[in-house]
Image (spheres, rainbow, N blue to C red):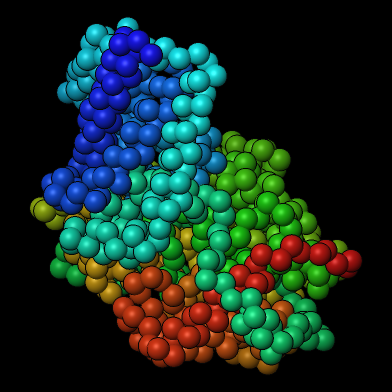
Length: 610
């Protein structure tokens, strides 16, 4: 082997080591600066975190260099790739309070569409920094344009294979190690049990790579099949009681959260935008959901509700869900969303969970596009709800019991932040307020008030008709500005390390209303306060309230929620109180839930003939 080849290899490796370290630092800074500026110093002091963030970038740069045979190309590519990813992560945190995950590649189309709704402030300073960074990258690697990997293609292939084999081994044994992931980041001062804080406390490339494990679909590593089988033998499937096949309508409201309950010296209302919603709640079973996401994540909440699963499987194949149960019981099941049916792959997923039909913008609601405001693309509830009721009346006229599932679009952000859409000032101005956030929040509340009034129309349509249960709930909170600044501005505790902060951030309301005919059939008043619930427990609670047992999984859940109704990693509701940790008996019951849910949820559904 001649001296030139040896020197070239050594030079290549040294420059990969150097540039991978630079990219590690820049990506850590970009990903964390807007979230918590102190985190960058913590990363530098924690050598294990710094190392775990360095390794993916190093192996990526080294491996791609072998593949393309050019160090310079690999360095430039990796520099752009990792730093752009870090920037995208920072934007997702800013607007959605969620970290970037590998699985987000599935939603690229949705992301590009939604990005058009938000105004990203790109200053000349930002442009200048980017240009300087690119120039440094370009000229910094220019002397190395002659540093090529001299081996033949076959040898380079073997080199790349060796690098990625080592990377795969390191990833599966170290990066994917759950115990390591949960151990790191405590010195950040963040609540590492909360998803976003847990991610940020560990850097960027390392926790991003860790999400590869979840991108494969939920896998319960501690699954005890024997325990699941033992539980399964204790329960049996039940049909809907004779004479009680009443109709069902569920409406999930976009970004619907009760802020009126948070009134304080920093949040003074001129009027209650939730007036009718409160009136309806007093005639219903009502309570709070503790959802899993903030400022986004509609599909997470909805799929928890109609599946009943806390840790949801892939819905790429037919699964047993509440929708499939209704379908098997002879119900006509229809879904509605006045937006893009391709979002979250609903048009493919809905048939797999039991829906007979799905009406979305492309195949139905586009015919009402004249009702969409000129400066937006959101179909208002004043148009959506009458169409919903038309389909409901058509459905029940066919003679079969009917199940309707719908997701509203009104309420989706962003909200105008420099004027009042309808001249309404729901929240009084205070000197400490951010002007743009104040306008935005008032316009959000104006939409809430309109949605509440449109619900009056739905209830009036259902009140004197055949027996029906109407379930209404919010999917998540609005984002409340950059890093949820609106919550702090309004004096609402949102520190996720506290119980109150967790509740205030993730709480949305739910209502279970029965019309007079349904109350007569069921022999129940259907009025009162329900427990706080995870969204995956809501349908089981509906069944409990109306006296149904349902499929065997529902029977198990109904027994479980007699003791535990909220199961977040750092927030539990057990025996009537919120707590940070379960009792020993609660931990045993939660293990039973995990085992049995995994047993039921991973079964492929066998369709039954109606």
